[in-house]
Image (cartoon, rainbow, N blue to C red; front, top):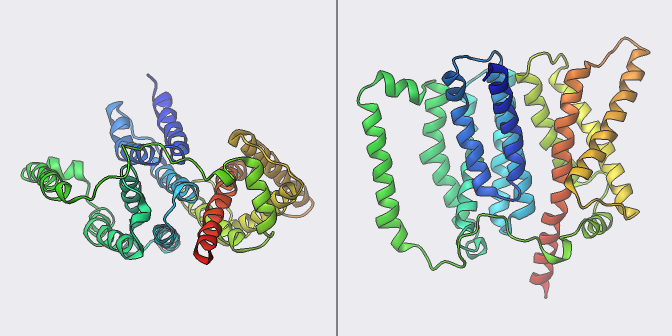
Length: 361
């Protein structure tokens, strides 16, 4: 098998696997985590080290975590857990942007990726228990425990000490057996101490996402809800600007060949986000909707390509010029995340409205 086939197979898998997170949250994000850890070993097994892959690795990490955040918009029923989840996600993205702009590695320790393991913790609970059984305090304790006891040591190990598990096992004779013993001890504690004290389960094992609320499980219902509750520039539009803007800035910093400044990238994304919001709201108010996510993506992508072509035409009349390859990459990224966010944000808002109605009645 050629090295090109291996390289593009891994890259394709890292872009495709996250798209399963909305429907199969726990298996898909664990798959992303495992593939992220194994990709370099796969390349080494075939005897090559792809140039620039570290940059693509960072970009794809950001991508699958962003898809996970949009999946929480779609699936999470616990509003306290979601609020913590939202904070953890944006807190980490701000930290990554700050690191990419400054190169200060300690920022990654200050802004740890607690979001990923909190997402896994919530989805693990949901496989057997109703997350609504617990309130804000419980989920805050879960997030705090992950932050202090898991992510801070891991971020220090990876980004401050800059150590690698494989290299440490090879270079330090006692480290491998100690690590294996620690894992076995943790499994024993979970099985013999934690498991007997768990509350009665609410349902059998659920790996697929729960069904959507009946009142908004169809595209036409989401469009009607959006037309009634959304504006071109509102809290949802602002969140989308920061969601996709921060991600695009990170991509612009880590991927080779991008000449635009971080501010230019963010402002361009903000412009396209507002235009997309306006077009989406216009379509929703006229009852236009697409049940297929593929069709929705195609419409969004085609619209953005046209907008980019117009911008490129206007720039050719002056001194500017868009870098076509880099621009289309950002358009592709932007269109995927915009499609997912626009499909799933109404579901989250619907749950919030229903919770308010239940509280007042």
